[in-house]
Length: 531
Image (tube, rainbow, N blue to C red; front, side, top):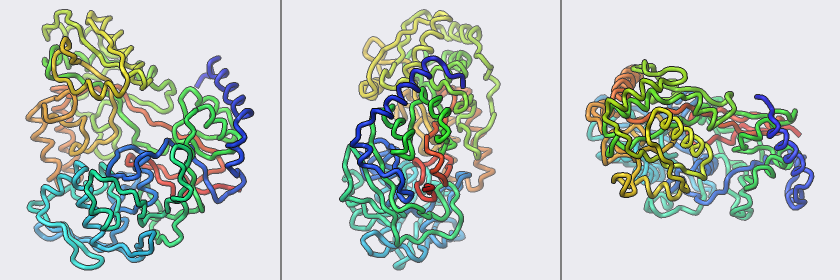
């Protein structure tokens, strides 16, 4: 990356911040303690991973709760708490046996009853879990360490559903028996870390201690799967809201890791021989624009196809995420998922876009100069920049595009409006998505007004999507993914703006950080710090 004058100014500011950093931060840390890792994370406000989809809550869940199965680096489900499992000949009953050595932090053993209650609670919230609950005739323990999921009809993606979507934390039965809408606050799991309640300082720091009684699997760590071997005594999450202060703390060794460093400070990190930018989540997110199917002009498929030809992904990526190391164009609705990404029906893609073709398609759609309203979320800078570029790009082909600046909070309310623009409605907004399982990824639904904002509807696509739950082999599911994508690009359920992976920053003395493909944040086991 070229270091601009603005980057140099930022570097000077960061260095100045390091020198003037409050002494209280220095007093609270001990940079020579190799058994403690200090990590700048976002504030943890919800502890229960069933109640929140926030990555920080999922990471809290990963640390203190174990789970039945986990995704490996190839996004395949692997046993975690489960030792053995089998499927009946009619494929309607799954029998599971827990492995030895599982125990909660309070000293009680993990039992099948804990697992059954945890699955049921999770199943009221997660899309894949709801599908299991709909298909299940019973979920019951058959012994202290064994339980079954009995189905009314086969469900080929049952194991996938247990690991995709919302993290499935195995809790004590007395916690998991709570309503899925009532927060569990005990923070007692059976995972590789214990939550240190005494040292928790909401808004400031959270501490996780190694669970000395945890028995890891014998396999090598692989993504979220394999042996969860904790090689440090303690991990401390620091909440430092000022980004320059967090980077300064990293530079002088007051912290070891920054989860989300600002992109305009990447050059500062690159230039420091003690620091490293590191992409831990390889799946990343796909940026997209959503059109309102219920209102003109996008109730006409030709107008939606016009947007497909209009978009220059590289231009949008430049204004959203300027560092090309962490972005790429993408034409598959399944992103870069190594299992399902494909090139079916992607002949529309053209480097730089095709504005003349877009202009022609708008004319064929009967567009007559009506106002086209774009929501601009000003407190999400990347989306705000993309919205401005989108408006400018539309205006250049004669579309009367207008921006509606608003906070993200206002946006989440206004996007529900299904009416015309003159009644508070909308035509386009920018969003992103990271899941590629069409059962539980809202962007990939096309079920009309029962679906996600924009309300795309296509019965042929939905008939294909409905088959996803019952396809048994990976090869058949890959073939189905191609058919679904082919139909998606015919009716244009949404338009892609490119993919981004967001790097973390850490000191080079911190090693062993595990790379994952999607999922819920990243795991803290296996990391270690040189003295």
